[in-house]
Image 1 (cartoon, protein in one colour):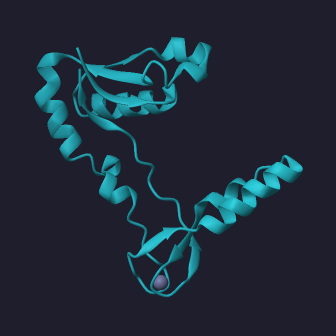
Image 2: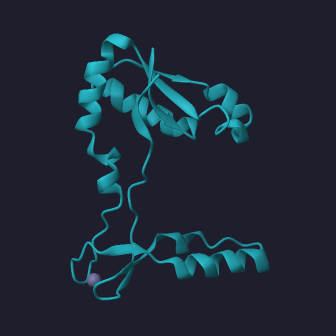
Length: 139
Ligand SMILES: [Zn+2]
């Protein structure tokens, strides 16, 4: 058995397993029950592992190579809706204000996390970039 990906949450691991199986690669989720008992251990045991049989390794590599939503280059590519520039970055200021409000009122402003700022025209907009997940072949 080879570990093909690790996730911090069992739901994410199962979603990935479903996609592998849709591509014809039987996959197994490991350690999920241990992590469900105490999610704080997730990092200690290396997360919820998705494993495949050794003979499916080549098919899995092929799958990962064409699995664009998991690609890190796509994950950070947020386009400015105003000028079309790719020169964008997460807007840090609302995040700090959000954290301050959380400290003062114990009330998290979660929506502030999805604000992005364009470096070309300084337009601030909302975006939901694809989350980067650690995917790769390990033992
Ligand atoms: Zn712009």
